[in-house]
Image 1 (cartoon, helix red, strand yellow):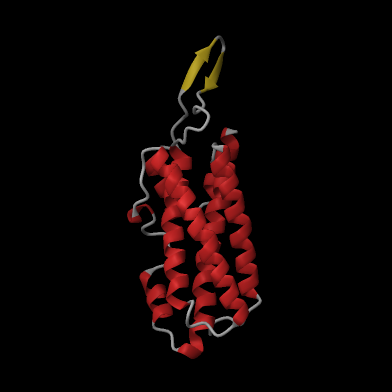
Image 2 (tube, rainbow, N blue to C red):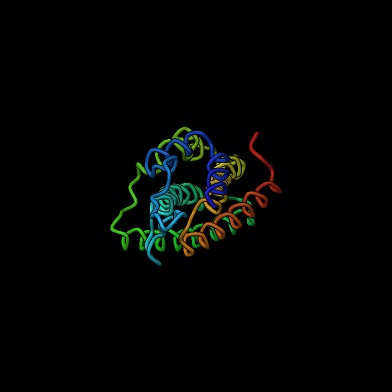
Length: 194
């Protein structure tokens, strides 16, 4: 189990890995209790969110808030009907996911802060590029910006699938990985920004 978690941490981009290690102490050995000649890793109480699960939820909350900002910037300016449908589905799905994540964080006595996602989301220049895109370019710029953004969410969720421990959070990570990967594939079929 520990080997799988370490392998998952190696696939994270360096900036995400640094956040995980700094906030959760993932590089440190897990607390153990001696039982005879064997050591048993202490598990969280069922339903109790711990370190890496809480960090993932905080990061996903920040990422999802930014996704909603991105799609709301352009939803009324898109010309491609299929892209408009995709953006509407993204908005509904991710608003629901955000409510769930915020609820779990609140139950754990945490709040999602914007700085939990600082430094690894879509940079302000890309958001400005999207906001300022001429009408004729909005569809293509959205594809470029949102594809990259959703790929980052899929990558984070994939890493969490190997590193997380809470069943509910792992289920969310699985759904995020699948949906964001599918979205990126759908956008890849549309004309890209030049």
